[in-house]
Length: 347
Image (tube, rainbow, N blue to C red; front, side, top):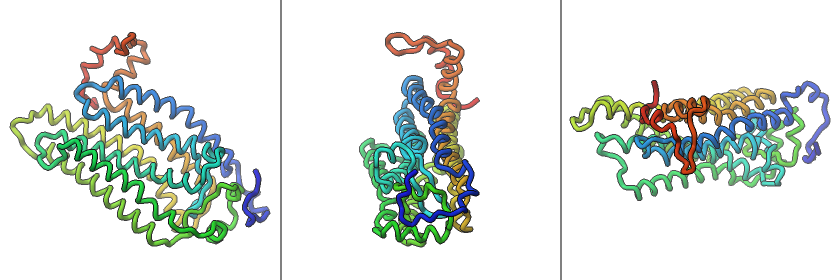
């Protein structure tokens, strides 16, 4: 590689770094994951569009939007950005397609952060969708235009929560000095041209806005989930049958798992980064593996979409067994076998 930054100092300390510390390993691993996640994401789009039963038709558009953002984040990790981060500092370098095309590392960092926030907004959308379908609930969004405005505001705020991270115009060479205080001997990728230091640490405005955003997002998530669970389990309504309630509970369980699995994958590396920051711990191999762990969220998201909801799961099983054909109009010949399970989310 070409050394770009003038603060590079040749040192024998890098002789202790292994192949797992290198950007070469990280980029190869990202691309290997993409070989599985991207075709699976395309197939999941197809299944949602073609197999979603009528009893789930109100979930179809939110699921497509949510899956689109999940796939976007998957592409960001494995192909477009392929980020290499240098915990415990707030610094990193994109190794993927964006870097090859000369896209600004500042934009790449912003795009990645926004993509993660968008995932949270999409989970709110899925929860609101379930919330609006419960007949016993009176305080809910019923007007389609109002719903569009409501989520337009949420998406706009998602773009703004991260902006204060990029308002500081400090020189990158000066910011790099703060990194060296915590990481005296970073890997050689730290000296690539695209390396970007986001923060020196301790900035108040970014902390304030991200905390406010977290409160807003969590507040909506808790309201829609708790309000829905309460009405499905504790509110009686003679006009709503128990079978309808059971069906809505199954739909809600699907949404809960669709939320929990990806965030569980993202949470591990986030907690590791907080640990590294608190203890000034630098281990580039651990950094690389934590990013790869985040990158597999796409596999788990697609698994949730395909194997938790029974119509999708039955379709996939029948497809594997060769029991499904597609005619010229695009419909499946095995529809009766799938429709028996309409609306069922779990065994």
